Structures are given as structure tokens and as C-alpha cells.
Image (tube, rainbow, N blue to C red; front, side, top):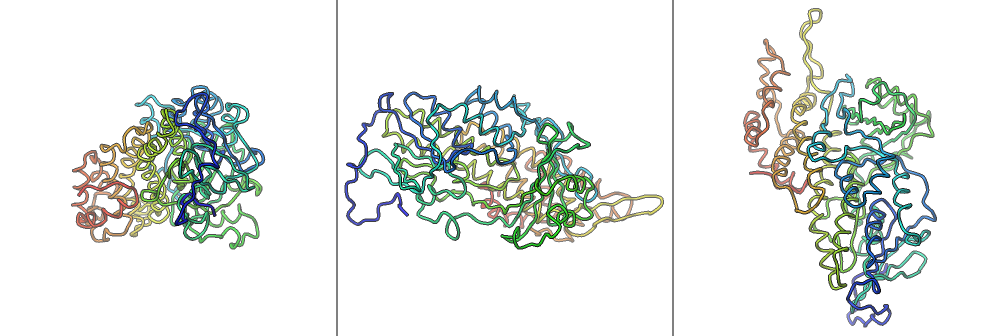
Length: 546
């Protein structure tokens, strides 16, 4: 592999092999920007830079031509606001094909009982900032909107960047294609996805496998897309059905079409190794036996050719390894691939494009390139790392921490009835009043920081990290059963008072940092929380309060 790092003890002067350009960036000597990869992030930055007469853009895409494949992509309010800021025509074209979900009911449902467990308020954080509601659009449609808006000749299909080398004695970077062809520019942006060749060259690591930094998440996902007559069409955006060891998502993608996902904890390669003699739909109906009738209804309505399965891979936050090297930078999944649970993968790539375009558009000299790319990294590093950590955090909590919530009912016929009154059920019930707080902080954090003009919103970070630490603490099994029962007032449950009332009383006023610490004291786990602080910091990038 050709690397960007010179390993010869006596490097030769390679400047003669590069086109001679002076430092000034002008219309006559434009900044030559090469973008490896024609995904959404790459196309977004290409569109923005192409509007600058002092910048020449080339997008190098592996595929011979763009094909209409891939399902809907969620664009949350933060990404839509960025797109609106970058290009109003692109935004208006997206709106013409868009399906809003953020103005409807969204949230988590008890997968067994079919009750709402916790709802997400996606509307209020957007409305208070005058931002568009979250929603979905078909990925091929979004891609075509960008392609139609780019000047002719910018896209070069049919060859992919395999590596690169830089001019160690002047300006310039050479993208080395898989065909052996050389494309020279001043800046190379690696927007070539999770299996990025640009990243591999930059960090001197393999593209795939051990040492690549890409790891199997522990989860496989089945996805189905179909025309479906849902009973709650127009009222519900998406529903996440939770239960022991797995979960199921149903989302409205517009025009009478729905998409569903089944997330299962499985070893890698289960798609080929696990037998499904009667097809994926029957297999999943068996896996989700006893779960909500809504799950079974949509599975039964889905044809086999409408179902796909894939293993999920992601990367840990790149807070130590480089985002840039000289005049080369990484963007999107190439540097911060994440789990799909927050629907922020494409959104964060769009934020990358926004910041990177701002930095490069402001450069007046080739001597500015390294400092502009360094500024891009500083503005994006912490925020993207937090979203990465949150996405994995959400997967782990839902699959490993959630169960059917404990429930107590009293009827004249059956008397006192305890449902799923075990440790996992109580943990899930305990989280129920906390999650709306966490979701509120999470969506405010996501929607507030779209400008990326500060490293982090510390006001949101403090509250977000503290509530998240409580969730992580509870789901890590540190809270002993005895402490749980004592904290929930179990003696009251066995008398007149109900467990739901105790949950509500405990968390009804958790609007202040001190309130959350009071909860820790009630559960007698303040010391355990302090011991867990470093773990949460590692996962999310936030430093928890002492």
C-alpha cells in the first residue's frame, strides 16, 4: 500500500513530479479539491465548494453509475437546518419529497403488552429553535437531488481511490486510483465510507479486518420495506418495541410505505450460518413469538424479496487517531461510522460537509490548508464522538438493559398481580421516568449544536452526562436488588401504595442536577456512581460530575 508517510531514510525531492502552482488561491489558480466517494456527505461538500469560483472540485466514485438502491434515510432537524443554511434550493427540493415524522408520536413501546413505554418529543426542541421537523426521504432521491445540482463534469465514475501520496516539498496530493491512474489536487477528502482506503493510508492500517479499527457491533439487523396500511398512519412516526435481548422498529416513510427493522444480538455471519428454511419472515415471527400483534401483522404482510439482513459494524470515537494529515481529511463514516439507533449517521456526515466547506471556502492561500483542516477537526471531533458513543450506548442499553417492564395490577377478580417482577423488569421500570429527561437533553443537544461553532455545549453536557451516568449505572447491574426494593418503597407496594406511584414520586421533579444526586442517595449507589464515571466518559466523551 502506498502511504502518505515517507519511510525512506533519505527521501528524494518529489516536487518535480507535481504540477507547479503558487500559494495564492484565485480563479486562475483554483484550489483543487478531490473528494473520494459520492455518498451524501461527499456530494454535500462538493455542492457547496462548487459554488466558489476559486475552487475546482472532482468527485471520484467507485461505481460505474449511481443506482437506485438503499432505503430511506432519516434527516433530523439538525441536518435539515444545516442543508437549509448551505443551499436553499437543495433544501426546497428535499422538502418536496420529504415525509415528516418529528411532528407525530414517536417513542418506545412495551414489545409484549403493546403499551407506550416512553415517548420522544422531537417536535418541541425543533419548534423552539424554528427548525424543520425530523423526517425521512429515500436515499436514492436525496442522492439524485444533489447529483442534479452539481455542474457537469464534477463526478467521475468507475474508479475508486486506493491510496494517496503527498508532496513533501511543496503543494499537492495525488489520489492513486485502483486502476493505477493518478489524480492530482491540493486537498483530498476521504468520504469513502466505513471501509475507507483514504483512512487506511492515512493511519497506515488495513482497510478491513484486524487492525482496521472497524469492529462488529454484536448485532445483526433485518430490514423490510413495503406498502402497508397501518392503523396509526398519520399519527405515529416511528415505534421501537423493546423486550428481552432484542427490539423491533416500525417507521412511516411516506406515501403509504413503511419500513421495519429487527435488531438481534447475534455473532457475526449469522445471516449465512443461521438456518431459515421457511424464509426470514417466518423466522422473525418465531423469534418475536409472544410479542405485539403489530409486529406480527407487518411481518406477515412483508414479502421475502422485501427483506434484507446485514451485520452492523461501527468504529469507536476517533479522539486519538487523526482526522487529517497535511492536506488530507476524513469525512462521515470514514472517520465516525456509528450505529443507526439515533438516525444520525447521515446527519453527522452532512454536518462534516458544512464545517469542512466553511473552512475551505475561507482559505485564501494553499498555505492555509493544514490550519483550515485542523480547525475542521477541532470543531467536529467532540460532537461527533459524543453522537457515536450515544448511538452505541442506545443499542447496548436497549438490548442488554431492557426487558418487559415490571407491572403491578389490582383487580377485584384476580387481586394483586405481579407481572415480570424480576430484577430486569424492575430495572426497565426504573428507567421509564428517567428516559424522557434523557431524550429531552439528547435532542436539545443534537439540535442546538448544528453550527459546530463551539466544541461542546457545556450546559447541556452537564445535565446530559449526569442523567446518562444514572442510566449506565442502573443498567450495569451495580444497583443491588435490595437497594432497588428499598428505594422504590416495596413495603408500600405490598400495602396500599403502588409501585407506579413511587416511581413517579421519585422522578417527578428531576429537573435539577441536585435532584438526580438525591436519586442516587435514595438508591444508596452514590459511591458506585462515582466509580462508574470514568466508564461513561469513555463511552460518550463527557466528563461526569464528581
